[in-house]
Length: 168
Image (tube, rainbow, N blue to C red; front, side, top):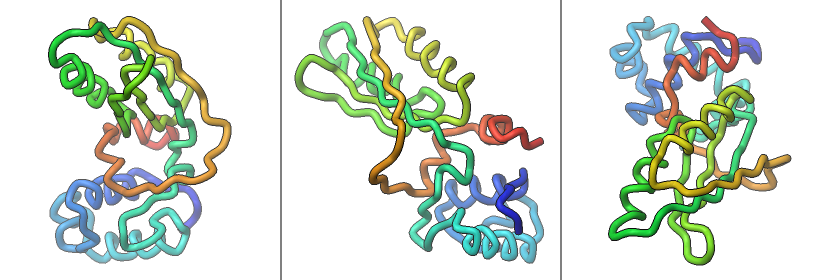
């Protein structure tokens, strides 16, 4: 297998993320991809380092999630606002982590994205949340340390991942 992933690879990765298993049978049932193909593709992705181990950890760059945005979010204070706003933030596509914080900032949000267009949509999605009064986002230049699990694929629509890599 080459370093280039295709739609079938992403179908398999998303099924692994959803079902948290490498079972050829389970992935076949979820994707309708033949079991032998599932087995071969999973082995190839392991050999190529896309799937880094049996703990479902991914190399985000190899699946196109190369842009990390760290956002500070200020929200309008009110009873239970941290639950309500936190939930809305967590539903934004590409958002992997949401933290309610002490201090001047209400939330820290971390998103992994595929393109500048996706960054623009992220900002627009933040702006569409009425309770948010202000945001300040930073682009991470490089990653020093990060623990990544395959479950993070559940934060994306398959079509978004594929379009970010020009895969049809």
